[in-house]
Length: 100
View 1 (spheres, one colour):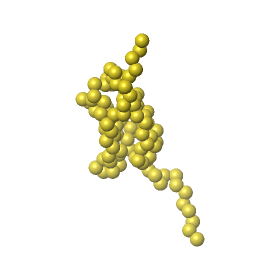
View 2 (cartoon, rainbow, N blue to C red):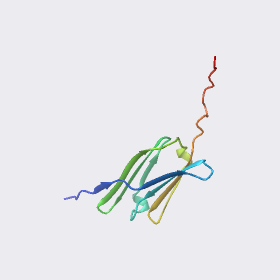
View 3 (cartoon, rainbow, N blue to C red):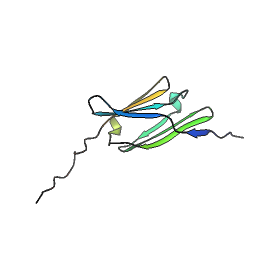
View 4 (cartoon, rainbow, N blue to C red):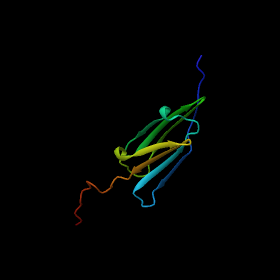
């Protein structure tokens, strides 16, 4: 018989880099192994799934501002998953509107 894992959201801290060009997300995943973490990013949201023993950390979050997921970097150190993703230029491709 499989025991059910307790699902819980990890503690997450989000902030901008000092130069305001990058979104930094820190996620507390104590005891989780790198190989067990599933991280998905798109321009406006992220998904994290990380089982550890009887606990399954899981969350799906909207991001404050659009990012460039293809340029994101993530690393796990001492139970802290740190993701750095550059913000997308929000006016790139924007249409100029004539004001009458």
